[in-house]
Amino acid sequence: MSVKPPTHSRQAAAPAMGGNSRTAVRPRLNPLYEQMQTSVFERMSGLAAKHGAVNLGQGFPDFGWPEEILEAAAGALTEGSNQYPPSRGLPPLREAIAAHYNRHQQLDVAAAHVCVTSGATEAVGAAILATVRPGDEVIILTPAYDCYAPMIRRAGGTVREVALRPPRWRIDREPLEAAVGPKTSAILFNNPHNPAGRLFTRDELDVVAAVAREHDLTVISDEVWEHIVLDEQHFVSLASLPEMAQRTIKIGSAGKIFSLTGWKVGWMVAAPEMAGVAARAHQFLTFSTAPNLQSAVAYGLDEGDAWIEPMKQRFARARDRMTQGLRDAGFAVLDAASTYFLCVDLAQSGIGLDDESFAAAAVERAGVAVVPLSAFAEADPPRHLVRLCFGKKDETIDAGVAAMAKAKKLFE
Ligand code: GLN
Image (tube, rainbow, N blue to C red):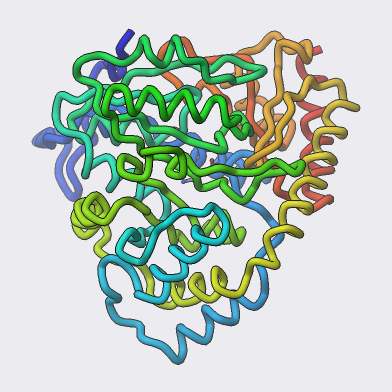
């Protein structure tokens, strides 16, 4: 079934700025944005601030960034250029990204494959604009990160949801194949998967690659969590599978690799011709990205391989602490082994409330912000799961777990 954007009745317009309400002119706005809610992450962080709640909603760690990279950024700010860098990114950063993927993922890429963007969300937008033509259908695997569907629609495409089902969230060939129609042009893939907290297995990657090859589809592969892979698992980029390098735009994020989400430094990696077209989409979105942060990220990628392993272990410890705390408080916690998110099953925890209502009560009445999973799908979304960010210091985790226990008691 194809997913249509929700149709809400138009609300009365607010008076125009400085205008008089009797003569207010109704501005003509894009209904896609008019009818859209503010992103669930922004909403939950706003509510967490308003209620003084522990913020386990929006995904950002409260530890873990290496001091050296901050010093590199500070040095670049005071000693380096503060003028426009090249739109596609500083050459040393583009080279560092390519070298990073040569070393870590055996990808045969060079600077010509790379375009630096202002965060991975911009990369997703540019990759969609560069590949989706009006009328194309794009497959997303739900629950899917909340920017995918609106951006596909803004590019004139239609969204086809393929639902992954908890608790295993497995990709099976049949439903994926069944979603491909004559207009399907792309799959927007995400591995490791947010919000499921799963690294897909090699079999599942083979399914995605086989469907893409067979139906000549482009794959936009959001791999921003590639280094937050716990429990000795090994990440494989979709772009490294046979014949996939030519049809994949891989997306990465320095914010995730270095626990610096506010820096908003991301990138696209693709075959040079495709990367060039994507770079043209990027040049008229943000044009370029702060040069000092780019320099620091180049330094981090060149010098920081030794930071990655301890970071994973630190995240694994945080995951274990939060999982244990929540289980001790009577919550059913789904296993999480990638990203810094875990999901709590409300129904299995004895809470007969939908995810949005629970999230609203938890932040207002118990002091903890979480993310309802129904924000990540439109057709038949799961309504019994909430996502918590475990990438936190012990005291944040303990305070969050205590507040979750309080939230649970509200409904007993
Ligand atoms: N990636 C973050 C998350 O999943 C959110 C980023 C954002 O708010 N733009 O929580």
